[in-house]
Image 1 (spheres, rainbow over the protein chains, first blue to last red):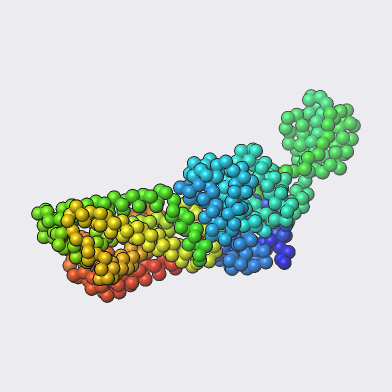
Image 2: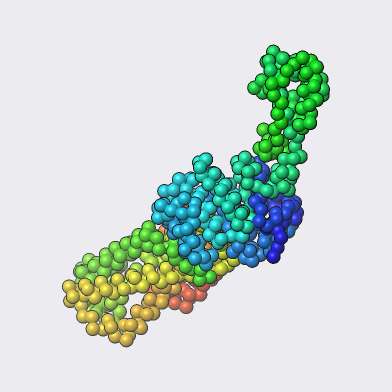
Length: 301
Length: 265
């Protein structure tokens, strides 16, 4: 039994002169939810395609569920995947589309109807795929990915086109699968969602892995933000001067001063303000969100 | 591979594909049978070639009269196979569904082989339907045309029918394989179908008329020779050989591309 759901070493894909993925190296333990993040064009989908045997790596090695990615037939029966959005036959119903994939993988038809219900398409399974909304197509894609009752689920932007309820349902579904021992590797642009569900993260920028590890480890690396607010707004400028005098970079937002320092500096600031005769209405500390960390690390704003 | 065949047949039994093709073939069968049987002995003729090629009650009363109109359907069966095979293979690229298929069946050769066998089954079923319909219609219309059907059920007639059936099946699969190969190579149903139809329906006829020496090298003529059991410019054996060479070329290129090409969309 492998301990890693996915493991890649120096995985590289080059198209002509362009390097889509460059020496990517990361490990994803079994039974975890791992977020896969990066700006558009950073190589996420190319990496996923290589993991699924759809394209051949130019270099490097990798394993999925302990099997070499150059032999996808050894592991794909245990993997569910939705890549680059849902793609189905428009003239077939959602149910028939799933049955095509069930035929192909040798899965029981009994899963088809239960999965349609699970993803909220129980009453529309008989409608043609071409009549589905984007959200319904996305749900069908997720149902198709779940068809083999997978040990590893790879989802590329599963919440695209879903309304807030749909996004919440997918989040709950991923949590439920993870609780039952399914490993989930999920890319998404909705970083707040990933922050809520991902124990691990792999972050890409321009084809290179810039972070791999526990989500909390990444967030813990970033400075907290301390917010201070004077009781009287007239004291704001003096408070800014005091803070700058202590050597901190600041930002003013909604009458508060934001300082990228940890909570222990709150006491220093409080004392300095008190000595200057300024009463503080509040001092609070905020952890940076994944989104803020992402922007900082990928240099995009 | 059986799983792939099953999955492909599920796609091909969709009403928009199955009923439309059955409708077209039924219409053509009724049209041809009516024209041939209702106009026996007409001075205007009742088949290609006009008054020089009149099918009379006597000629239709021979052992091959019962499946005469089935033989006329061979080109249409070929063209339908070509369009169906081309669209079924290229749509996987245009819909983006190939990636789903490859995730569920990562062996590309099994996938390709299964697709091909499923299409052969589809062609077989269509040809059988057309054969049964044409022979049935011929029997039904023989009474009006005062044609004797006593020889239509003879051993010679059954042997002749089975030979024709086998030849039409071979030629139809040949046309289908060309369509399937072009579908994979071009990745677009519109391009694959329009280019192949343009070639078989227009360019090859023009080339045959203008360059008579080239006629015996053209793939459409070779496939026609197979379905007809041999033709003036092509013996049956030469038809088989030439068709085999062309199909090996097209099929080989398509197979290599299908096996090696990255599935990037």
